[in-house]
Image (cartoon, rainbow, N blue to C red; front, side):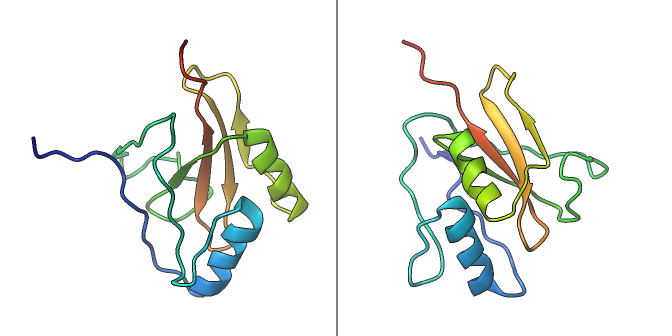
Amino acid sequence: MARVLGIGGVFFKAEDPKALAAWYARVLGFPVEDWGGAQWPHPDRGYSLWTAFPRDTTHFAPSEAPFMINLIVEDLDGVLAKAASEGVEPLGRDDSDAYGRFAWIMDPAGLKVELWEPPPPAP
C-alpha cells in the first residue's frame, strides 16, 4: 500500500547554518555529519506525528516561526542537564502526560524545540 510511514526530515533556513548545526551538536548531542546535517534510525519507541495547528495558536510561543520541531529523546533529564551546562534553560516542562515527558527550549535561531521522552513500551 502506498502510504507515508513517518517524518523523514526537518529542513529549514538559517542565517548561519554551520553555527546552528554546531549548537545542536554541542547542546543536544546531534551527530552532525560533514555534509552539515544529522541522521538517525527510527527509535525503538515513540512515533512521528504530523499536526496542523490553527494560525492563531500560541503553542509555538515565544517563537515567531510558523513551525516547531519535536525531538524524541532517550533521557529528558540528561538532555536538559546538558543544555543547562550550555546556558540553555527550558521554557517549560510537563512530566505528567500519559504520552511521556516533555520540555521546551529555544534554539539560537529563535525556533522552539519540543523534547519528548516517550513512555517505556508496555510489557
